[in-house]
Amino acid sequence: MYTYLFIYYLIQFCGHSWIFTNMTIRFLSFGKDSLADTFYSIGFVMCLCQSLSILELLHILVGIEKNCFLPRFLQITERIIILFVITSQEEVQGKYIVCVLFFLWNLLDVIRYTYCMLSVTGTYYEALTWLNYTLWIPVYPLSILAKAFAIYESLPYFESFGTYSTKLPFPVALSICFPYILKMYLAMLFV
Image 1 (cartoon, rainbow, N blue to C red):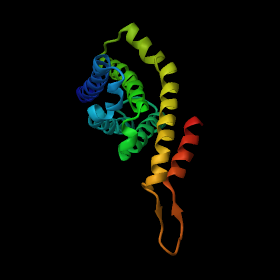
Image 2: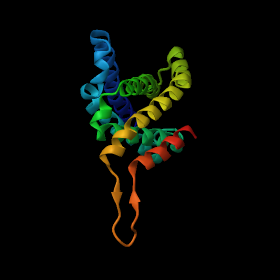
Image 3: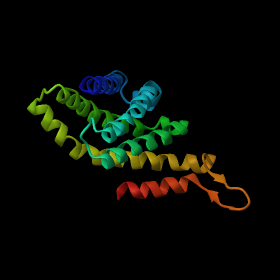
Protein backbone atom coordinates (compact mmCIF):
# COMPACT_ATOMS: atom_id res chain seq x y z
CA MET A 1 0.00 0.00 0.00
CA TYR A 2 2.89 2.36 0.71
CA THR A 3 4.16 1.91 -2.84
CA TYR A 4 0.71 2.60 -4.26
CA LEU A 5 0.28 5.73 -2.11
CA PHE A 6 3.76 6.95 -3.02
CA ILE A 7 3.03 6.52 -6.74
CA TYR A 8 -0.36 8.24 -6.37
CA TYR A 9 1.19 11.21 -4.54
CA LEU A 10 4.04 11.31 -7.05
CA ILE A 11 1.60 11.47 -9.98
CA GLN A 12 -0.38 14.22 -8.27
CA PHE A 13 2.82 16.09 -7.39
CA CYS A 14 4.05 15.89 -10.99
CA GLY A 15 0.71 17.08 -12.37
CA HIS A 16 0.35 20.00 -10.00
CA SER A 17 4.04 20.92 -10.32
CA TRP A 18 3.67 20.98 -14.09
CA ILE A 19 0.62 23.24 -13.82
CA PHE A 20 2.27 25.55 -11.27
CA THR A 21 5.52 25.76 -13.25
CA ASN A 22 3.69 26.30 -16.54
CA MET A 23 1.59 29.11 -15.06
CA THR A 24 4.62 30.78 -13.47
CA ILE A 25 6.79 30.59 -16.59
CA ARG A 26 3.97 31.80 -18.83
CA PHE A 27 3.32 34.73 -16.50
CA LEU A 28 7.01 35.66 -16.34
CA SER A 29 7.32 35.37 -20.14
CA PHE A 30 4.09 36.97 -21.33
CA GLY A 31 2.92 39.00 -18.35
CA LYS A 32 -0.79 39.83 -18.14
CA ASP A 33 -1.41 38.35 -21.59
CA SER A 34 -0.84 34.87 -20.17
CA LEU A 35 -3.70 35.24 -17.67
CA ALA A 36 -6.44 35.23 -20.28
CA ASP A 37 -5.51 31.88 -21.81
CA THR A 38 -4.47 30.03 -18.67
CA PHE A 39 -7.34 27.58 -18.91
CA TYR A 40 -6.55 26.75 -22.51
CA SER A 41 -2.96 25.87 -21.67
CA ILE A 42 -3.46 23.92 -18.43
CA GLY A 43 -7.19 23.18 -18.16
CA PHE A 44 -7.00 19.56 -19.29
CA VAL A 45 -4.24 18.66 -16.82
CA MET A 46 -6.06 20.55 -14.06
CA CYS A 47 -9.28 18.62 -14.70
CA LEU A 48 -7.31 15.37 -14.82
CA CYS A 49 -5.57 16.02 -11.49
CA GLN A 50 -8.79 17.05 -9.78
CA SER A 51 -10.63 14.02 -11.15
CA LEU A 52 -7.82 11.79 -9.92
CA SER A 53 -8.15 13.32 -6.46
CA ILE A 54 -11.47 11.49 -6.09
CA LEU A 55 -9.32 8.44 -5.31
CA GLU A 56 -8.36 10.14 -2.04
CA LEU A 57 -11.91 9.63 -0.81
CA LEU A 58 -11.58 5.93 -1.56
CA HIS A 59 -8.23 5.87 0.25
CA ILE A 60 -9.88 7.29 3.36
CA LEU A 61 -12.85 4.93 3.18
CA VAL A 62 -10.65 1.86 2.72
CA GLY A 63 -8.35 3.02 5.51
CA ILE A 64 -5.03 3.34 3.71
CA GLU A 65 -4.97 7.08 4.31
CA LYS A 66 -5.54 8.62 7.72
CA ASN A 67 -7.62 11.75 7.11
CA CYS A 68 -11.10 12.92 8.00
CA PHE A 69 -13.54 12.05 5.24
CA LEU A 70 -15.94 15.01 5.40
CA PRO A 71 -13.46 17.91 5.03
CA ARG A 72 -11.68 16.13 2.17
CA PHE A 73 -15.02 15.29 0.52
CA LEU A 74 -16.12 18.93 0.72
CA GLN A 75 -12.83 20.21 -0.72
CA ILE A 76 -12.83 17.77 -3.64
CA THR A 77 -16.53 18.39 -4.34
CA GLU A 78 -16.06 22.17 -4.32
CA ARG A 79 -13.18 21.98 -6.74
CA ILE A 80 -15.02 19.68 -9.12
CA ILE A 81 -18.09 21.94 -9.04
CA ILE A 82 -15.97 25.00 -9.78
CA LEU A 83 -14.18 23.19 -12.61
CA PHE A 84 -17.58 22.14 -13.96
CA VAL A 85 -18.74 25.76 -13.89
CA ILE A 86 -15.54 26.98 -15.57
CA THR A 87 -15.41 24.29 -18.24
CA SER A 88 -19.07 24.62 -19.15
CA GLN A 89 -18.83 28.33 -20.04
CA GLU A 90 -16.12 29.26 -22.51
CA GLU A 91 -16.49 32.94 -21.66
CA VAL A 92 -15.52 32.27 -18.05
CA GLN A 93 -12.39 30.31 -19.02
CA GLY A 94 -10.63 33.49 -20.16
CA LYS A 95 -11.25 35.43 -16.95
CA TYR A 96 -8.30 36.42 -14.78
CA ILE A 97 -9.94 34.90 -11.73
CA VAL A 98 -9.49 31.42 -13.22
CA CYS A 99 -5.73 31.98 -13.28
CA VAL A 100 -5.73 33.22 -9.68
CA LEU A 101 -7.85 30.29 -8.54
CA PHE A 102 -5.66 27.72 -10.28
CA PHE A 103 -2.53 29.36 -8.88
CA LEU A 104 -3.86 29.19 -5.31
CA TRP A 105 -5.03 25.58 -5.66
CA ASN A 106 -1.74 24.44 -7.12
CA LEU A 107 0.34 26.33 -4.58
CA LEU A 108 -1.38 24.37 -1.83
CA ASP A 109 -1.34 21.07 -3.70
CA VAL A 110 2.34 21.14 -4.64
CA ILE A 111 3.23 21.56 -0.96
CA ARG A 112 0.64 19.04 0.25
CA TYR A 113 1.53 16.29 -2.21
CA THR A 114 5.25 16.79 -1.60
CA TYR A 115 4.65 16.44 2.14
CA CYS A 116 2.39 13.39 1.72
CA MET A 117 4.76 11.71 -0.72
CA LEU A 118 7.73 12.13 1.62
CA SER A 119 5.76 11.17 4.73
CA VAL A 120 4.83 7.83 3.14
CA THR A 121 8.55 7.08 2.94
CA GLY A 122 9.10 8.24 6.52
CA THR A 123 11.02 11.35 5.49
CA TYR A 124 10.13 14.54 7.32
CA TYR A 125 11.57 18.00 6.83
CA GLU A 126 10.71 20.52 9.49
CA ALA A 127 10.34 23.41 7.04
CA LEU A 128 8.08 21.40 4.71
CA THR A 129 5.97 20.19 7.64
CA TRP A 130 5.57 23.75 8.89
CA LEU A 131 4.72 24.98 5.39
CA ASN A 132 2.17 22.19 4.86
CA TYR A 133 0.33 22.97 8.09
CA THR A 134 0.48 26.79 7.96
CA LEU A 135 0.35 27.85 4.31
CA TRP A 136 -3.32 26.93 3.99
CA ILE A 137 -4.24 29.46 6.71
CA PRO A 138 -3.87 32.52 4.42
CA VAL A 139 -4.30 30.72 1.08
CA TYR A 140 -7.49 28.74 1.74
CA PRO A 141 -9.67 31.81 2.52
CA LEU A 142 -8.23 33.50 -0.58
CA SER A 143 -9.16 30.48 -2.68
CA ILE A 144 -12.71 30.56 -1.30
CA LEU A 145 -12.97 34.21 -2.30
CA ALA A 146 -11.60 33.33 -5.74
CA LYS A 147 -14.16 30.50 -6.07
CA ALA A 148 -16.95 32.88 -5.11
CA PHE A 149 -15.75 35.47 -7.59
CA ALA A 150 -15.50 32.84 -10.35
CA ILE A 151 -19.09 31.81 -9.70
CA TYR A 152 -20.17 35.44 -9.61
CA GLU A 153 -18.40 36.06 -12.94
CA SER A 154 -20.13 33.05 -14.50
CA LEU A 155 -23.68 33.97 -13.40
CA PRO A 156 -24.45 36.40 -16.27
CA TYR A 157 -23.45 33.78 -18.85
CA PHE A 158 -25.57 31.06 -17.27
CA GLU A 159 -28.50 33.48 -17.07
CA SER A 160 -28.25 34.74 -20.65
CA PHE A 161 -27.55 31.38 -22.30
CA GLY A 162 -29.84 29.32 -20.05
CA THR A 163 -27.20 26.62 -19.71
CA TYR A 164 -28.35 23.71 -17.51
CA SER A 165 -31.68 25.43 -16.81
CA THR A 166 -34.63 23.23 -17.61
CA LYS A 167 -38.35 22.95 -17.26
CA LEU A 168 -39.67 19.64 -15.96
CA PRO A 169 -42.61 18.00 -17.78
CA PHE A 170 -46.31 18.44 -17.09
CA PRO A 171 -47.06 16.57 -13.84
CA VAL A 172 -44.46 18.51 -11.91
CA ALA A 173 -44.44 21.77 -13.91
CA LEU A 174 -41.33 22.98 -12.17
CA SER A 175 -38.55 24.94 -13.78
CA ILE A 176 -34.99 24.59 -12.56
CA CYS A 177 -32.87 27.68 -13.05
CA PHE A 178 -29.17 26.82 -12.77
CA PRO A 179 -28.14 30.39 -11.81
CA TYR A 180 -30.32 30.10 -8.70
CA ILE A 181 -28.54 26.89 -7.77
CA LEU A 182 -25.20 28.68 -8.22
CA LYS A 183 -26.41 31.57 -6.06
CA MET A 184 -27.40 29.13 -3.29
CA TYR A 185 -24.01 27.45 -3.60
CA LEU A 186 -22.38 30.86 -3.43
CA ALA A 187 -24.17 31.55 -0.16
CA MET A 188 -23.14 28.12 1.19
CA LEU A 189 -19.49 28.82 0.33
CA PHE A 190 -19.30 31.50 2.98
CA VAL A 191 -20.99 29.32 5.57
